[in-house]
Length: 186
Image (cartoon, rainbow, N blue to C red):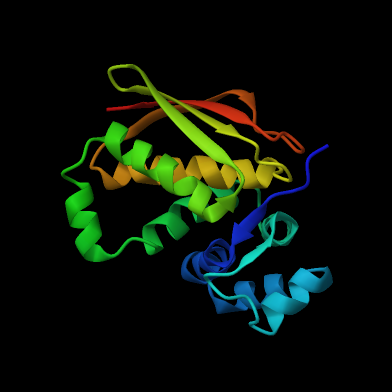
């Protein structure tokens, strides 16, 4: 079985910032206080840096702590919020000029910059329907997948379109290293 992948520190930091943005500093502090293991200690002491690479288990633990303190649907909302927070205002203006398909495709190209050894492919199935395939995401769990769905939905929204439906066709569960998502927009 392949080793778990690593994630960029910016994912961890953006998720913590998204919790604070959506639910406040008190919840952020409670979640960070409950993080287990060496990852929790590194996060609490602010040793995680945006450009560093960290075990996906640390990110998985962070998302698990968020769910333990709130509810699972929040992870998807946080995926959207952290994507929004990582895009400057000037870039958002330009994103409105790009089609959802092109924006999702660009997001897919950037994915491996945030998750080492993993990949994403995007296929325009027909018109306003995309099929997005994540592969080699060893160590992902359901929360990690919900984060990816939220992030992808936010890219569509940033282009000025509206997500009509997101449907997981396969994978996307605990211990799945792949997921196929069908996303319809208008």
